[in-house]
Amino acid sequence: MLDGKKTIELRRRVVHVARGTRVWIYSKSPHAVVEVLAIVDRVISAKPEELWSEYKDQLGISKTDFESYFLDVSVGCALVLRDIQRLPCSVSLSEIRDCASSFQPPQFFLRLRTGHPALKVLRMRYEFPRGKGLRSELPDAAYRPLRLDGPTSN
Image 1: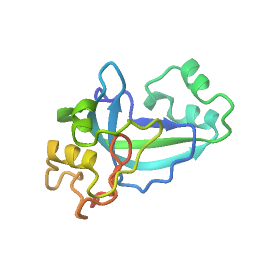
Image 2: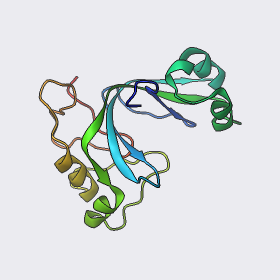
Image 3: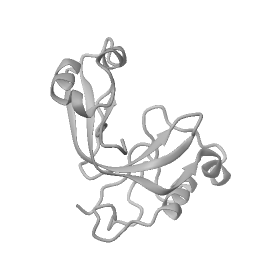
C-alpha cells in the first residue's frame, strides 16, 4: 500500500461504511502491528469479475489470488482508499493488549467505541495533523481500528 500499488482493500462481503471513514490497517504475523492509516474514498459493491476488470491495477494481487479470494462469491466489495500513510510509530498487538488484554485482531473489521482501551492506544500514538484530512472534528467518533475508523471532517 505504501508504494501506491495497492489502493483498494477487498472484502468478500459488502461493507457498509461511510466515505471519509478512517482505516487502521493491521499487518498479520509475523509483524502483528498496526502500521498504516488511510481514508475510505468510496465503497464499491459489484460482481468479482467487474471489480477485477475495473480495478485490477489498484488491487496489489494477482488474478489467480483474486479469483481464489472471491471463489463462490457473487458480490464482492472494494474499499477505495486515499491519503494512505505509514504511522510514525507502529502499534504492536502486544502494546494494544497491554491496555486491552482480551483484544483479538479482527478477521474482517472491528468497531471500537469511544473509551475502548485499544482505541486510546492508537490515538495516543498518532496525532492527526490539522488540515490534512485525517483529523475528525467529532470527539472519538465510532472508531474501528485495525480496519475501519470513524468519519473525518472531509
